[in-house]
Length: 302
Image (cartoon, rainbow, N blue to C red; front, side):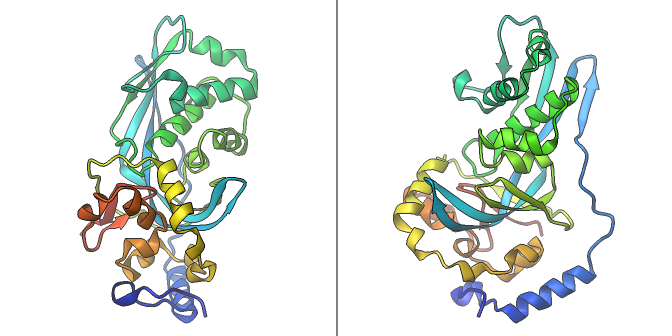
């Protein structure tokens, strides 16, 4: 029997109830939801693009291979929370990024994206362009928050470079290049409002649904993703039950959130994050869910 046992809070999902929900949502699907084009602004001050945050509606670890965890997750773009990546005219002796505080250039995801693009395309136009432009980042997404801010910035940078430098490169190629930098890059490259993401993050499948209006709460606790995953491997990996989330990728996000009120059921990394960062337990509230490796909680806007 498929589904999971979630105690009094989460309830129980079985194969019949999931199938009924899927039939219902398929009948109500809008025919007007489309994959959105990039929103690129061009003016006398240069070029700019929005780099949106994301939440994980659910995140389930499916295994561990070659030193990395595999997963299946529903990523959803947060429409009203985004950084802005801009290319501003500037005579530059070297690659310049403004707007990041206390991050060495070599560790910056935008710089990594720049180097990866140059190496992959061998296109001198990229280098020439950034002799005449600097990168300016207007940061709104909190760092180490489970919202994908760094990856979103890097992916937005790559997409903007593709447009302004007229690179002959497909989104699939761009996603492949981005995946060498971070697992969340492909989702942001494809620019889907909602998608099922699996494998190591490289499999991104558009999911048709109305975008949800979400309220976010990010406590002042920085969660290191690598620490949370290491904690999961040490303490939680042996508890994985693949059948417990069978069919979730077919349910729309609203249904998933309305069927469970326990963040630990929807996000396998929550328990690991609590172990690694015990103060998170004090921040948990009834009806709030947990995104990524944390520490951001989210819920449907009332």
